[in-house]
Length: 444
Image (cartoon, rainbow, N blue to C red; front, side, top):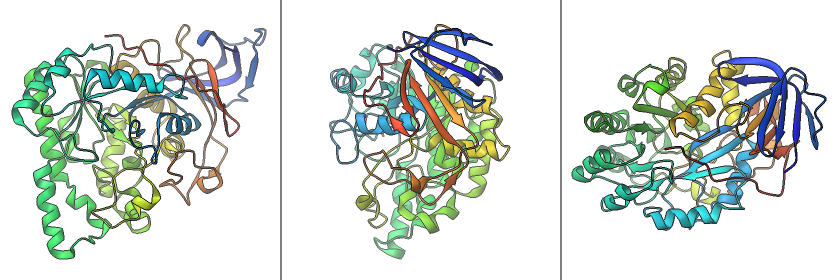
C-alpha cells in the first residue's frame, strides 16, 4: 500500500477547519501537522488550499447485487460512489434473493470482497417470518436490521403487528426503517386510478405517497421504539410534519435518530414538470415547504445523517407510465457536489456537512476507526475543489444505468480526489482500476 502525503490542505474535521498536512501510511492516517513536507511519500498531493473532508459514509444504498446486474452491482456502483467522494456504504437487503438470513448476508460480503471500490457493510432484512434470524444475528456482523414498514421496491413489507413488536423488542442491534403506511397509499392510488386510469401524472406522486402515509408509519415506529427502548434510525424522512417526532439533542445522546437524502434536500414538487419519473422515489419528493423544513432540520439537529438512497434503474424502466415506472434514483456520483450547493448558498458550512455525512454515521453505527480525520484512523478522505464548476452532462455517468437525475445541471464544486482505506481510489476524473474497499468493522 503506497504512502500518501497531502500538503497545503484545509482540513475539515470535528467542527473546525485547520490548515495542515496529512501523512498516510499503511492505510491509516499516520500524522497530522502543520508542516510534514519532509515526510517521504510515494504519492504527493498538493491540495493548494482546497478542502479535505472525511469521506462520506452513505448509510443507505441499493447497489442491486445479487440479482439485478442490468441495473448495477457492488463493483459498478461503488466505482461511481468513490468518484462522488463516498468512501463507505451500507447496502440494503431488497436484492434477489433478499438478504434475510445470516447465510445470505455472509454470501453478500463474499461478493464484495476484492470487488468494491468503497468500504462496505450490509443490512439484514426483516420479514414477517424471520424473527429468529434477527434475534440470532451477531451485532458486529451487520450495520443494522432494515424493516420496510411500507411497501416499496421489492417484496419485504413487514405489516404484521406482532412481528413488528417482536422486531422492535428483540433486535440486538440498530433498527432502520422505511416508513410509509401501505393502506393509505393503496387508498390514494385507487382514487387516482378512478380519475386517470393507469396514466396518472407524476405531479400526483407526493399526494399518493402522502404526508399522512409517511407520518402514520414513522409515528408508529417512534412509538414502538420508545416502548421497547429500541435504537431506531428513521430513513429518508420527507415531510415537515415528521420533524415533530424528533429531538434536537446532539446525536450521541439519542436512541431515535433520523436521516434525510440528498434529493429530498434539492428537489421539490415543482421538479416533476421537467424530470418526471426520473425523480420518482419512495418516499416521494414532496412540497417546497417540506423541503425547506428538511433543510432546516439538518441545521437544528433534528436530522442526524445525510445519505443518498442510491437506487439505479435503467432509463427504459424509468420511462414507463406512472404505475409501471420503478421508484429510485442513481445518486452516489453527484451526491456531495449536490450537497455543496447548500454550502455555496450559505446554508450549510463545511463542518456541518462533515458531521452529517461522516462523523454522525460513524458514531451511530459504531464504525471502528472511521469517519474522522484522526491519527491512527483509516484514511478515508475526500478532497473537494469549491471553485471548479462542472456540468453533469460533460462527465461520464459511472453508474451502470448510465443516466443521472441531475442531467442538465451545473454544479459549482467538484470532487478532486478520494482516498479509501489509504488507497488513492479517484483523482483527476479517473477511478483507479484496483478496488480497495474493506468490510467495515462494527464495534458493538
